[in-house]
Length: 274
Image (cartoon, rainbow, N blue to C red):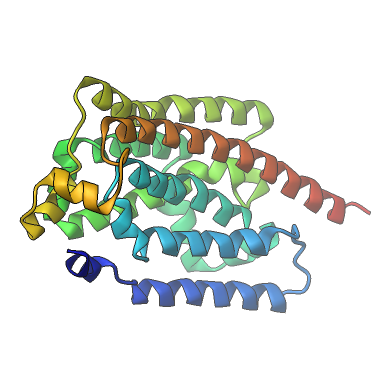
């Protein structure tokens, strides 16, 4: 059984090359542009975001996360609530301004991104739809559609984090606006989190990804869940826990992003002042 499962536990080598390439370009830019003023933790944030991005969508952990509701929610939370925020925190403002002067980057950033509030609303709707059993079943049958949906959500997540931790100080919200935006974010994303909790309280839902593996192995769903992951995984408790986990990670990521963004702004302001 485990030999068959290991077929899908592969590393995404093209994505690894892209991540390494981005990391190398970042290091070259930072080293060559000596006049860039940086917050000392920014390189750590940037490289950490790339590492987490690869672990969540390019490593065997991607397949493993499909075996449990709670593991899946942890993967989604890291991908959409942690990776975009620390990636943007890792970009120095002056480096961003220089990149923005290039025609291609300027067009991508200014023309193709939705407004942050609109991105937040669209993301919340698509994120809720993603966790509907009918939609998940479609994704198990069409991997390309699933991957495209994940990429779309990732792009939207960067846009919705933009007004909180943007590398451009002029595009960040002030304190009052930021508090209202954070409140709106919590309200809009809460239905997706509560969906798991309500489903668990009512009757529980089957994990379609686990069901697909069951079909390949010709084994009952209950049997495979016991062998792969012990209780409470793939039980009502696991499903309810998944919703609370995502709520907690989202809240903590917002608080951390605001605090780290303030530290970055204060540090850069100190370096600019005589």
